[in-house]
Image (cartoon, rainbow, N blue to C red):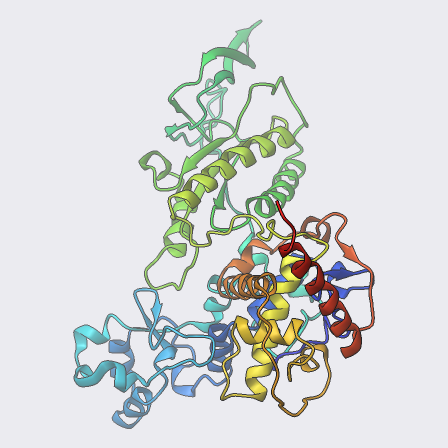
Amino acid sequence: MSDLRLFSPPLPPPFPFALAKDDPALALDGDDWAWRFLRLNPEYQSDFLLQARLPPVLRDKGEWPLSQLQKELSPADWDATCQLSAAYFCTEGFVLGRPFDWDETPIGTMRQILGADVDDAQKLSQIFVRDFELDCGRTWGLTEWLAPSLPSLPPLTESNRVSWFYSLYEPIYELAVFDVSRTDRSEAQPHIQTIEVQAINSNNWTEYRRISAVEQGEIVQRLATIKGEAPSLREPFRSGHEVGTLICLDNNVRTQLRAVKQLLESVAQARKLPRNTGDSSDFEPLVLDAQHPHAKPFTELQTALRDLLSPRSVVRRRQWRIVVWDLQYDLGKQLRQAQLVLEAKQVELKDRHRLTIPSRIRAGAKYDAKEIFWLKAALCCMEASALLHERYPEISFGYPRLTDAFFNPKSPWFSQVRGGPAVPHAPYEPETSGKFTTACRDSLENGRDLSRLNYSILVGQKAADLLPANAIEAPSRVTEQSAIAWMVRQSAPAKKSKCKKP
């Protein structure tokens, strides 16, 4: 299944994880990287096979409790259902028959899970048939199931023209709604649904509120300016210019805000609202804890949250905030201010170990970018481990053997990870350099984290956002002779340095 053609050949002997001038990795954006890691996830591979082989007895039964399914089926069909893999079912948001590891996925049958309780109605009512159509998006963030054998994302189609991972950052929003039933002339100011919500911002506040006034017998509206300390409570949705959106702090905030920016501009254009009306120098968007009691009147957003956080959904995103924007003020300023508030909260939650995906920003700063580009190193180690384990299933390929495969030309795997053929095993000295071992250990750990969940922090990022500055290594031909010569040059200074006196 694994395919190393993306990075090999060549993998330059001094720095196999560096970026070459003609490296295909230079053209990869965040979605491309995310897919390359996700496809190596054993859990995703298992889910893809399960949905592709969905038994007829479970079709159109997504989210049915087993108690209901048992009533609908004949005794023979119910017995056959109990013989199915337990991974076709979930309880309290957890897929049955897991956890998994990277070499095997031990999943038993439903009968093995139930044991003597195979006819216990109460227990059966707590187990549900998985809805794989929904799980594709809400669990993995994909718009459609993609075969793990695909080394690259397919071209976008009309149904997913924005991104294959658009469900990870698609804006979930709610618009202010006018009460059009009020037509009395005396009600000059339209009735807006009002909610009292606590504002997080506590700096000096300038508020612009529309008031009704009588001028020459006519009722007109004016903007009243109120200055002072920020109120502890403020009414969102006080005008038809406001929009509420959900932002997930378990995902990349900037990617979500880029999509929100497009949404806000689209709404402003549809409503023909003037841009940058009034003095917005002191205006800030409201950022609210989605669980705060004052936020509950956001009915559409709360409904969406209940679905996102429901026990039956296999959801990985738990930390949400409601952000209320006002389209009559400068959107660029609001977006910048919201980003500061949201990312500060994200850091706080990360420090408290409250984020589902703890790696808020990319890792790898500990390495010289000209020697190791952390994403390339992580993917090389993941792909090599999977490829070699397929060829040698009796051997486990952790970071010690990967260190040999990438850095030791005498290793029987040195040629294979560079796209060459398998070679006969012969006695050799394992690579013991601490620098190389640490690089492979960190890269394999990063790769597994990115394959499990952290791939979502890459989604929506541009290639330029991910590539380090001045990190391009000149390409060179990899041969056993050149690798040995380089290893000799590397070891000589180290020995010499030990002889130096202080």
